[in-house]
Length: 186
Image (tube, rainbow, N blue to C red):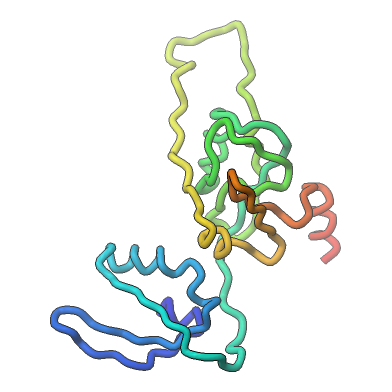
């Protein structure tokens, strides 16, 4: 089923002992990000190999992701308090102390639309302290994306920055207000 959404055609299927061997003809662009899905689906037991078969006619667009992005609201350094609030809205790609800028994608939203989150937001300090209120906030470990994961995650309005130190996904238009105006015009 997952191979079908990636424009693959099943060419051969035959059993080998207790396992099943499946051969597909699939565009190379359809393999982006599939290996991690394959390993998850087969619980790490599957073996995947690919060989260039030849050039073929364009088979159409491959369905993109159906999730939105969590986008940084402002430039600064991501702090635990801001990340704690943002992790309730989706899966994060960054941890505390990571430099971020407006328009940078810091996570994936389970909803189809993009959400702007403030990961630089600090907790306001007051002189009143309640016992237990200053407990350390627990963050879910961020999902670290490989180059292949980043390329698969990209939407049409997003870009990938590759540097020796990091991989960062960002919106093509960085300003939140400009993006909102463009969205309203469309």
